[in-house]
Length: 109
Image 1 (cartoon, helix red, strand yellow):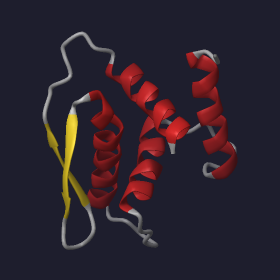
Image 2 (tube, helix red, strand yellow; image 1 turned 180 degrees about the horizontal axis):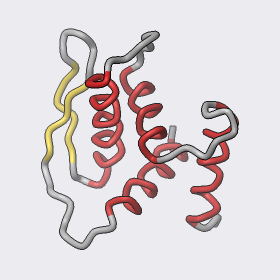
Image 3 (cartoon, rainbow, N blue to C red; image 1 turned 180 degrees about the vertical axis):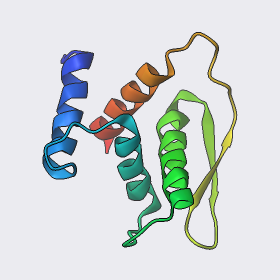
């Protein structure tokens, strides 16, 4: 089985090639694109608040399999909503958790 660092690098390489013009993306950029995918609609210009909401949608979707969030519904505008069901424990490396969740997301989607 491929180790964590190699799988994470493959995700970064994919985004560098497809979306960021050769620049290494940060986690927020990856979350933004996952949020767009989960929203299922593209607009020419998302507002700053919408971009933040897209990253939140991605975070909720990514952490849902770990029991941190639960999907509740889509609103009238088509935006998915989640409720927080468990706090991330103190001492948890949240960046590492998000990276692991991103790897799992792309390995199953």
